[in-house]
Length: 126
Image (cartoon, rainbow, N blue to C red; front, top):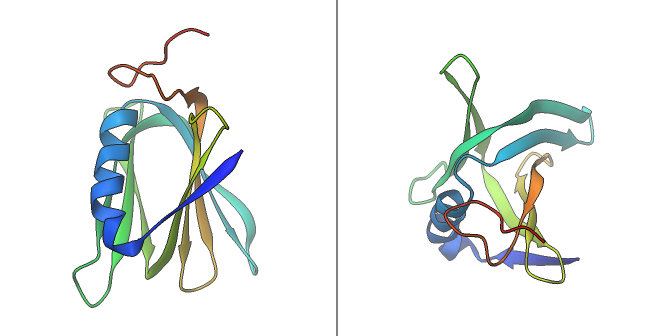
């Protein structure tokens, strides 16, 4: 496994690309913090997108997933300080972790690992 630190000036572009590649992939999201422990937020729902708004005084990163009833769930990370992508040694995305200024981490994990040679967001069989 390897972890890629995304520089803050690349957050918007990288997360837009990440969203395009992984749109519709089933994800789980948990928030981990020193005071709250690990709190599951989403379990195996389709990813709709991740956006970074870093140009304002109060930067945010937003994760959106679809619900079965046609609605969506939005998770907002205020004052993000670090974005990391965890990959296998072969370059397949495993997870996205976003740290916030309050010490919490939002961890988005894929049910199916996205391979480096995925096409249209769908993995090729191994």
